[in-house]
Image (cartoon, rainbow, N blue to C red; front, side, top):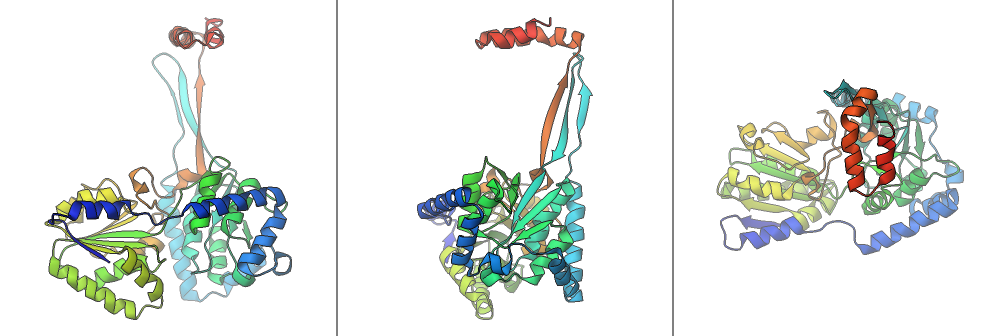
Length: 427
């Protein structure tokens, strides 16, 4: 764990190294993914079957390629009532929040008499990747599938790795609540390629969303253009800005909430109280000892964590913007004053009683967020990721007479005489 003092003479190069540190895929992953994509494009289902046998340890012909609707319904019906109620509450809140994101069509006539506008439509099919292996993520199913449904996507296809052919019932229950149409027992880069190009069994989709490991992220990067993607997601990260009036145990728990995701996750604390910084560090050590996820969390904290003491919390804000974190907590009495000065963050959690984890499950806004400083230019998953805008233009004789001569002049200036003629011939 790195401990920095913003007033120190060597702070700037140390902080710059923290900002620039890479925790994502290397060249070997890129080459491996290229090989997998080529194999799926050529051998299609046979490649999926081979990779599933090699990586997940089961034969799709024996365990089944897809999950039946009856199996999903049974998983939901057998769920503990408290857990089912929690999933349904989360689903309702996510749906309500995302309904407000649906854009309105536009249709207007300007001063020249030209009718202009835009019409929004959902994509025909969306693909959802749900991680398996290290943990089961029913919340990821809800966060990805519900915005697609709200957008009006007709077919939602889900893929997920199933080690030894097994799939967590919670994931199946969440898929049933969210209205997923198809679930395929394939994962990894090969599943992304299958949804992009299609196979004999799996129909191609238009947009692929959802987090995954380095191979999944790289497959999405390489296949962007064949399909749309939400983002290239990297390891999880959280930045907490906190004063000394917080309970150190609360802030320690918040920092560990992201560290436990994966050994490459990152947790950073900014505080203006050096004594509080030490108390948080001690609380992290205490809490790690009791975590079932302590191996991943301890590695993430020791390798990527940081505590940064600043002269004032206001002085932390430009540093936070440089990090452009996935999650930002402002654990102070007046978070609005700090929030007003923040430009780059995936999602911001305001006040002492708003831990990041509430946003992962039941708050409503999407928890699929840009990582690796991409919040400088990207946003979290939304309904718009499943929609596209088609503009339209309509001119009558008078409208074309008003604006056409300028189009002719510009086309001639660009050396495109056919462009000019197609307008001039109507004038």
